[in-house]
Image (cartoon, rainbow, N blue to C red; front, side):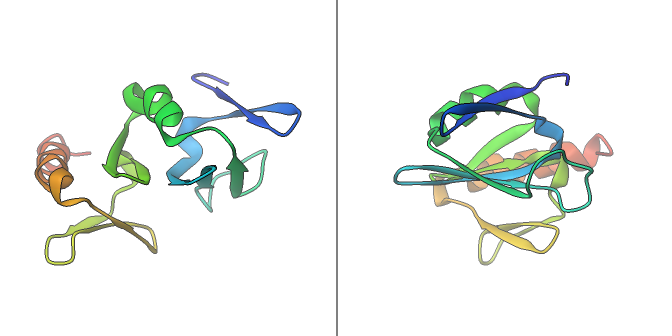
Length: 118
């Protein structure tokens, strides 16, 4: 797997492929990884791990992910649209919040993606 990221799950390590990952949701004691429902993944659609969101931010930064909120990293290639009024990003049927300080970054990202035909 190209660009695979290895995550600790209990006593074992699991390789994940970033392109199959929709978003990472951080919480107090770790993260939940949410995968694309239509991809042929070799693992579950949701994986819980004790790795921090900061770990995933560093690992995924150059692989098309952006931090849009203190608790969320998103795969920018899967963004369907951005709601300015309630500040959320829609990935398929999932609404992801956008922090006030990240709104301008997300707007620039969306504009750049539309100009590049992504």
